[in-house]
Amino acid sequence: MRSDAVKTGMQQAPHRSLFNALGMTEEEMKKPMVGIVSSYNEIVPGHMNLDKIVEAVKLGVAMAGGTPVVFPAIAVCDGIAMGHIGMKYSLVTRDLIADSTECMAMAHQFDALVMVPNCDKNVPGLLMAAARINVPTVFVSGGPMLAGRVKGHKTSLSSMFEAVGAYTAGTITEEDVKEYERKTCPTCGSCSGMYTANSMNCLTEVLGMGLQGNGTIPAVYSERIKLAKHAGMQVMELYRRNIRPRDIMTKEAFMNAMTMDMALGCSTNSMLHLPAVAHEAGVDLNVDTANEISAKTPNLCHLAPAGPTYMEDLNEAGGIYAVMNEISKKGLLHLDCMTVTGKTVGENIKNCSNLNPEVIRPVENPYSQTGGIAILKGNLAPDSAVVKRSAVAPEMLKHEGPARVFDCEEDAIAAIKGGKITAGDVVVIRYEGPKGGPGMREMLTPTSAIAGMGLGSTVALITDGRFSGASRGASIGHASPEAAVGGPIALVEEGDRISIDIDNHSLNVLVSDEELAARREKWQPREPKVTAGYLARYASLVTSADKGAILQVKP
Image (cartoon, rainbow, N blue to C red; front, side, top):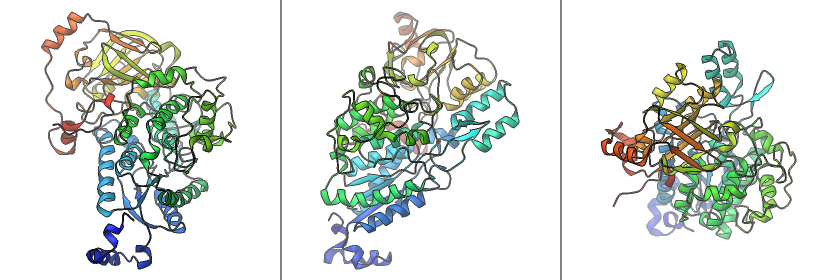
């Protein structure tokens, strides 16, 4: 056993004395030691139930012959961190989570791991750690929130943010907003649409790192507790068979994840996280492949914010395996990939039927013949930008309008809420990238304000920051290179015409090469916004968004 390094032999007598201090018996010390990474806390609604999940995992591990040992991981609630300085501290936690989990697992020599994440950066952070540590590992998330109900309609957090915009526009009352407050988030769990948390939990299942239902079983269902027990049991089977994360997270598995990303209409943040996880697994995943995959992958799901269905509906319709089974009919999946079930993808999905063609469209009748995400390039984003095309109004797939330029999110929000943005405008928010932010803030507040004020089908937004999975409309993020390193987005001036053509994957500012070159001559780097603490260290190490915003030590 790997854990023999801390448990067995005369030299380890001092170590055993410390295990005795924990109340660990000799019988427990003779068994494989399984680390359970608990992301439980009392500030994230998606994490407040994880103590119950962890207890179920512990029981499963013990039932299957292992010794469970719990240690923590942090998690930020992106919704609470949204729209203020707190959002600078969201993406940066992904790497903190990976690093701290690596430290704990290596320092204590666990034989296997069960990761218990749920929201946003917690999932990719633990996937990155799993790839680094490479001991048998199973993921079990806390599960999605049930949808809220307001005025007889299902709703979710994106509707809550948009309600603020509607109030600003005078279309709803303060009492209406209060009703949204009371009813939008009715249970614990990750927010109920196909936002970043649920996107990554679903893609964990696709990658083969979680059991069936990991991405879709609601947090409040007893089935989630049973899933956690099975995860605890299954990690012991992986230990016995020595099946490790890098055996599962192969190049083909990531291609499956990219394909299903398109089919499900996942968050644009997946284009940051999948390359970062792949990098840790030793797989080169270029976001440019997204368009190639999208061109042949139909979009089968329109979950919130793209449509009126929610994670609970996807679960009832057959879940991720049912969507995978539909997509497999077109021969688009690598079915021989190994998974944490101990079986291949093909074996897992073989008998999983689509139980609701209104929630999961059959491949013969998709929402669109192409996938939910598009990568754009042009003189405004030579390396790439990303948009959730499945959440874009048809009339905005091609758009040209004047640039309205802001050097931070706060200024843009003030202009939007002040009625200074009009139909046809292209809002540009820059110096919010991985380095420039630092931390690459999500722009849910401005996109929701635009949608809530009735401008979602006439106004576009472009940023070197990123968007929440809850954002909808022509919201184009991850513009690379970012403004802080002199990317073309830094050269845009108020009133410049910007051309967006999502179907043809282009994003351009209609200014001559000569004019852009002249502006570049005059451009000067900005003084860093943050010069101390973790954000300063992060800014010095982080790469661009098109590389997954991974941290790299400079030679």
